[in-house]
Image (cartoon, rainbow, N blue to C red; front, side, top):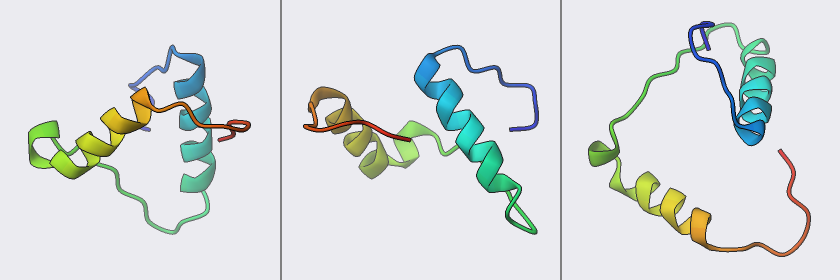
Length: 60
């Protein structure tokens, strides 16, 4: 979010744009990475989300 990361994937570009848009609506904003091994619940949900096909349109 500080300009050093360049999104290449079409979906990630959209997520980054939305995150930048939302960031501007806050007085303060901080973002940090939690290592996968320290956040097993989020990792499990992300893995599950990548194998399940949802019905209906996708939107960001």
